[in-house]
Image 1 (cartoon, rainbow, N blue to C red):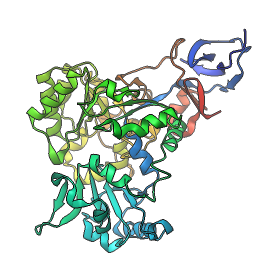
Image 2 (image 1 turned 60 degrees about the vertical axis):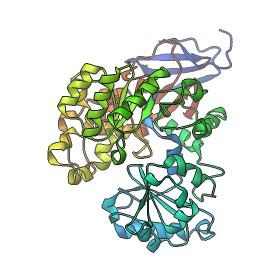
Image 3 (image 1 turned 90 degrees about the horizontal axis):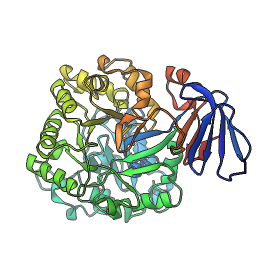
Image 4 (image 1 turned 90 degrees about the vertical axis):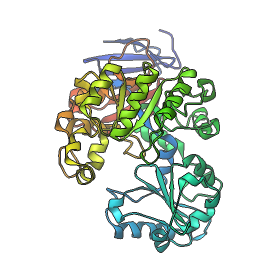
Length: 482
């Protein structure tokens, strides 16, 4: 066999349940079988009997937000658990040389009221007075700024519906639902948490590759092409090697999203500002006019009921999705099964936030949180995601959580929603346009987006963890490990 500069031969690997070899040429799997000819393959990887599986796809995450979060100060559970620790972390950040210069922001993420109660500018001013400070709520929907931060973003010119005021008409520092405007306000100032001109997207690519992630669906509701130009540039430069699908707002066409792959149109149903039925219908029809499916953000029962009613009114397209499905009652399960709607959920939240849910959520609702097994049993297509950075970006943690359904303190939430380890893995193995239909077999002719584990699959599934990932291949290129 003649040499092929792009050829990769992976030998002695468990593929589809048998120990075989696999050959890659020009970014495609060309052969799977025992004793493949090793000639003409400049790269040979010995799998030592470890499993070779299709690369994982995170079906709902936020690339730019994760890049920023990796360079931010965590101020929520489990890293920060009380008011004293919260104050200490922020004061230490303000003492860094860049903070003392007065030219940079302190960007804090992951805050929850359980740490130090509700925040406003006065609370933050008492901790950090002169350095611009912004604290993001764990939900991702709200920022709280100190007075220095409010001045820097020119708060009086921000959209009025996103700025909370006290009884005297003074901004409280709480800004909700206006990230599309704030994004440009932060970027016009030097941010001490950012490397260079913006978040380090390459760091996201490296991190995800270490988890065996070869594909991403970015669920950010980008409103214009300017909003995702950084993603285009990151892919062009090879800083983000993962296959990337982006959602964007319903008014964007697939051609406007190009050269990125167009996913479903993202429709927000934020609890603080729920759109009306007619407004929702108009948004779905707008997406349909561009030939696009929809992904509807639903984290409450009311939002889900309205979303399903709207989809029934407009008509369901194959590929329509419910994002999160944080609370799903049995009636909605039956309705979604009949409609053919997919749910893209985050089992990791049961582990990461479950103890807080046990305090905040009514007891009768606990078994309906982030359902999985019950949805699958009813015939609802289900896919997995991390919602990073609002959840931990490691999909293996989510896989483990889907199996165990245990909180950090060991309490089980929704025992009937647990799935087998193999089915949990498959939540992250669907294609971006059919996330609830896992692709498990590796066959000749498919793209060489693969994850090599250091142990056989059965052993890896006994204790799912990223530490089992030995190598990751995207388009046949080794992007992690060796």
